[in-house]
Amino acid sequence: MFLGEYQPNITEGSRLALPKKLRDQILGDEVVLSRGFEQCVFIYDKNDWLEESQKQLSGSITEARTRDLKRYMYAGAAEAAIDSQGRIVLPSNLKVYAQLDKETTVIGAGDHIEIWNTSIWEAYLENLSKNLPS
Image (cartoon, rainbow, N blue to C red; front, side):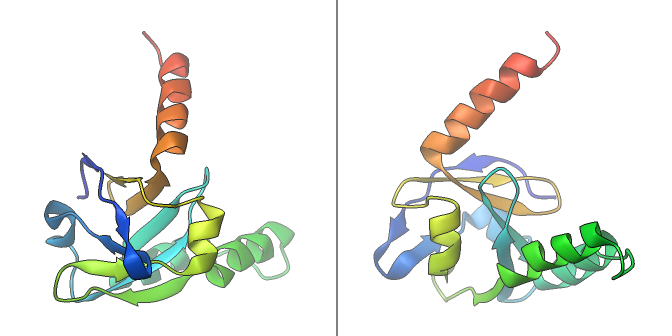
């Protein structure tokens, strides 16, 4: 299970070092990155991506919602290798989508990892906190 919140920076060449505690839970040396919801990037272990995508996309191709979700998930997705230093290269389309520049917040979200622009994450978290029961 992916847990925690980390603040790695994006370095030259659009590289992001995955935190060791998260990286150690990934099987193999490849992940799948995709557009997440609420303007973040999802990272899945390759096997988990296959399982999750099948679960989410099991609806009929004749349903508009299924077609829309397939387009959203697959068109923005990319495979990424984890290098020997634990880094991945972020595709430019995902960096633009999530407004990722240098400062990021990487969170464990249970079955996947999310990469956020730190300012967007902080605003999202503040808004979320206001709507939780006290």
